[in-house]
Length: 605
Image (cartoon, rainbow, N blue to C red; front, side):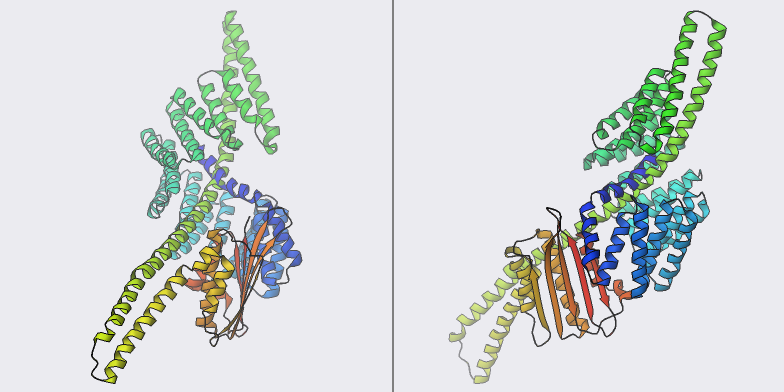
C-alpha cells in the first residue's frame, strides 16, 4: 500500500511544480507572439508542452504539434524526435494508447538515426510506462533495459537509479518480489555511490516494503528504521511521515494493531497541514482497516468517512457509494448487538454472518482499489524526487567549482603574486651593488627583471579572470566589459550591448552567466575563426508585477558547426548544465560556414 503512495507522490511533485510556474507560462506565451527567432520559438513550444504535460493534455498536444511543425521547417532532426515523444506522452495521458505507441516509435526511429542518446532513453522510458500501464510487463522490462543501457553508457546515475526503481515496480506487479528486491538494491547502491541521502532513504523504504510483503517483519522493520533515521537527520517532515506509514504497514501485517494505529496517527500528524490530502486519506483508510480488524466498527466507519471526505471529484461518486455500504454494515452490526441483548441466538448468528461476509467483501474491494490507485501515485513521487535530486546535485557542483576558483585566485594573488613581487624588489635592491663586467651581463640582468614583471602581470591576470573584482563589486555588465576589453582587438572585434542591468543581480545568477559568457567567448576565439563577435545582455520585466528575465545573445561570423553534435564537447555540456541550474534554457543556432548564435534565457522570478 505504501509503495503505491510513494509512486503517486513522485508523479504529483512535478505537477505541483508546474502549477507554480504560471508566470513563466505567461512569459513563454508572450515570447511566441513577439520573438522572430525560430530557435527561441521552438524552445518555447517545447517548454510549454512540458509545462502542460500533466495538467492539460490538449494544451500539451497543441504546443507539441506546433513545435514539431517548426522543427520540420528548420530540419532539426533531434527536436523532431523530442516533439514526437511529447505528442506520444500527450496521447498516453489522454488514454489513447495506440496513438501514443505510434508516436513513441516514430520518436525512437528519428532519435536513433540522429544518435541522440539521452532523448532516446527518455522515449524508451515512455514506451516502458505505456506497456506497464497496459499490463504487457515483458515488453515494459525490455524498454526499461534499453534505457538502462544508455544511462549506464552516459554514467547518468540519477536516471539510472530511477530506471532500477521502475523495474522493481514492474516485478512487483508480476508478483516477483525477489526480482523487485534485486533492482531496489541496485538503486540503493547507486544512491550510496553518489552520497544521495534522500535517495538512500527512499530505497531503504522500498526494500522494507518488499520484506513486509514476504512476511519478513523483523527485516522490514530494520530497513524502515534505517530510512527513518536518515529522514530525521535531514529533517524531511514529509519523508518522516512516509516512514511512520511504513511502520504502520509492518505492525498491521504482524497483527500489532495498537502500534499500527499509533504509527498511522503519527504519520498524519506530520502531513495534515502540508497539503497532501491523498496521503492523509491513505492513512485514514489504513486506520479504518485496523479498527475493523479490532471489531471497532464505529471507529472504522468514522475513519472511512474522513478519508472519503477529502477525495478528489474523480472518485467522489464511487466513494459516496462505498460510504453508504459501510454505513449499512455498521447499522447491521448495531442490530446484531440488539438481537444479542434480546437473546435471539439464531437470528443473531445469521445477521452476524451476513454482516461479517459483507464487510469482508467490502474491505477487500476497498483495499484492492486503494492499492491500485496508490501504486500509480507512488510512481509520480519517485519521478519528482529524482528531478529534485538532479537540481541539488547540479547546485552542489557549481557551488564547489566557484569556491575552488575563489581559493585558487586568492592563493595566486596573495601567495605566488606576493612572492614574485618580493623577488622583483630584492633583485632591484641589489642591482646597484653588482659590478657588471660587460653590457651583455647587464642586459641579461634586465631581461630577468622583465620576465619577473611579466610573470607578476600574468598571475594578476589569471587570478582576476578566475574571480573578477568587477563582478563582485559592480555587477555582470561591467565584469563582462572588463573581460572583453582585455582581448586583443587584432584577434577579434567584440561589441557588447547591455540593457536594464543598472542594479546587481543575485550573486549566483551573475556568477553562472559570467562563466557561461566567458566559456562562449573562449570557444569563439579557439574554434570559430571569427573576426566579429556581438554580445547582448538584456534584462526584461514581464507584464506581471515581479516577473523578470534576462536574455543573453552571443553571435559570431565564424565557420559554424553541426548542431547535431552540440553535446559532444565538455565545454558545451558545462554551459547546458549551468543554465539548467538557473532553470533557464540555452539554444545553439549554427551550420557549417554560417556562423553561430547562442541564445540564453533565464527567469529571475
